[in-house]
Image (cartoon, rainbow, N blue to C red; front, side):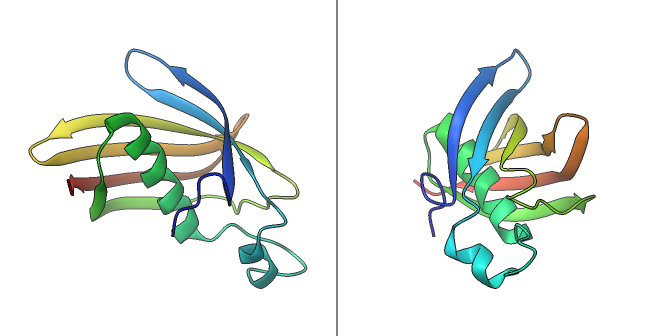
Length: 123
């Protein structure tokens, strides 16, 4: 399921020498939040992973498959009403047949999650 331009929208991209930082807006009215959870919407972890995957794919211009989750740490939930705009910082490293990605999801000083993922190229 593709989330870009539906579940989230890219507002800004900053490219630095060692990382890429996206500012994205979450759609608090998206149907996912009606079920997760109606009175207190929380962004599902799998949606965070998929968002990172789609942002990485934008930079490498390749189809990707999540091969390995080396580490994920969730520090705080992302409520799209309280935090409709979040940032995703990506450090993408080439490896044979794919990419190692270190990602941080945050807003200001608040870190929501940190991920270390391995994606392989599918096309």
